[in-house]
Image 1 (cartoon, helix red, strand yellow):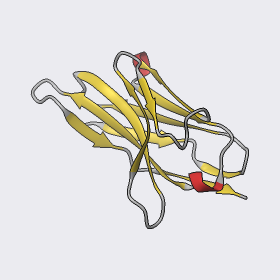
Image 2: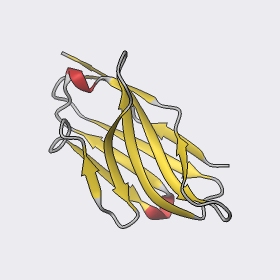
Image 3: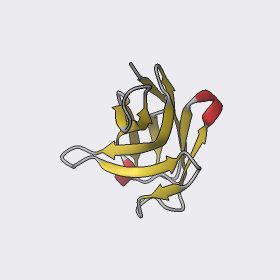
Length: 120
């Protein structure tokens, strides 16, 4: 069983910064990609940023230039550096892991979510 533990959320003023971390543990044969999603009240969950096993990144247009995703393969950890935060970034942020175990490919696991609140 895979476990994702997120940390780093909180309350920050507009223009401030936060860094989210997500550490994966458990029976992981290989990691295909890791990513961060967010869900604001009354809205659908959306992709914020993703990073492939080869280090290729992609971002939502709304965060491009402000957020940076990175990963530490040795620690099975993904980070999301969020700068110049805006009130519209307020949401619950979820870590997502795409991986394979020794039997099954193309699995997905979600973290429990961490609240990010940006005040104006």
